[in-house]
Length: 166
View 1: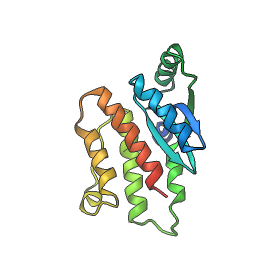
View 2 (view 1 turned 90 degrees about the vertical axis):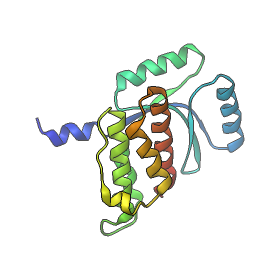
View 3 (view 1 turned 45 degrees about the vertical axis):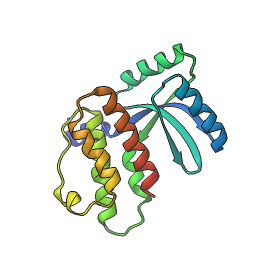
């Protein structure tokens, strides 16, 4: 089988979506409910819509088990599949530029982290980072050993990619 094809399949991510809101007040009320129940989440503002995600994975069976657990505590979540590399299409350019190279690197790094693979180094990115805050979150993924914190950081990195790539 083609190795490139196998790697491309891993670039699909699954997100456990707990909520979708068109107004900030409804989103805030739902977030307060999640905070009261100590549920981990991030909210992502994507094209004017607030999405609440609680888990990210490249493994459908793993995220399905998380969905079952949320269903048992009363949440009607859904699993959203995304080809995250499509996010690069919003970068307006006729040629590869620093922004594209940076976001390609952080997306690949996020996928590697989710797959429990070693995150590759790109010294060009470190010498001239397009977004230092996002790069810092990606760098945390390289050294974190606590799975719960790692999952939180992966969600936060996803949020930042979506909100900053525009």
